[in-house]
Image (cartoon, rainbow, N blue to C red):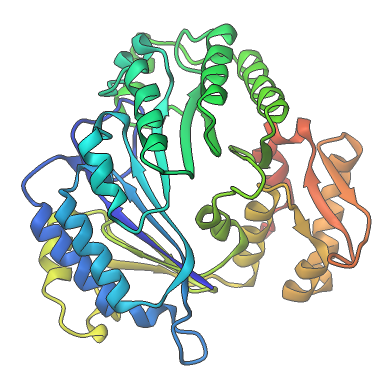
Length: 396
């Protein structure tokens, strides 16, 4: 099992909270797609396991805003993808989109692609707050975009929401959730607003133009999020992700399960099951350097690729973070099998205070997990960073 991530670094405008690698919409799309296609072809061997490249079970096209790409360029990318790799017939193929790009014509074009899942960046249905965030759509466009996609036969739709916006009230957040539920989408991702350093939003806070939401309000919003979506039939399967039964995001879930994936494009990360590597976030250098590659060997020790060879303790720490993010929890038998009895004991000792204070719970042994599971409780989800930090292995 393996996945592929394709990064499309183009946006028509920049949201004030965004720190993802992207560049404003320009005329370099043709050259970029040529370089991205070249990387896809030449790096297929990265996913090789036992001499073979396994079938690809998930593809995620993210950004940036992939729907800013001309339809023929998206078609070209998918042609290269299917010509180069064996794509499982039941593969999940996700494309990120913004509501303002989802015109009826654009939706028709997307329906001709092998895309079977859309992830739509709505953030909020409040038009005033959307303008403050410098989003290009309003609340009405967001609702219409989802409906138009459903009418066109797209049956697996995820939407992104953000809570804790400057000045946002609990009642406004409840209205956003009510509207999201009414749309009858299959998946909702909801994130607390983060003030990333050097973004316009971060500078606005520094200059006292906006105030960060109080912690008590953020907790109320998170509790409301869990309550409303649970009542609507959604499973809370990861800290920020909710899905109807059978509709979990398979690609994102593979990250949390440690499944290998190849990331192509500037700033895209890859994981071979043991070590990580990523392309440097430089569009011009990517087009120039990757576009000129002719052999797979050109990617070995290439100056535009950075690598992180993880030792056992770093892999243990990643297991703690990725597993505890999910409702599946941390499988203690697998932890011992992969990292040894001493690391299991270390983990259990570190967990004791949080088991006592109700931030962690330990599920009893069962066939699939003979040593049981560690999970964050509902209260622990809101304090997850601190709990996970305490379970990480840190050298003295």
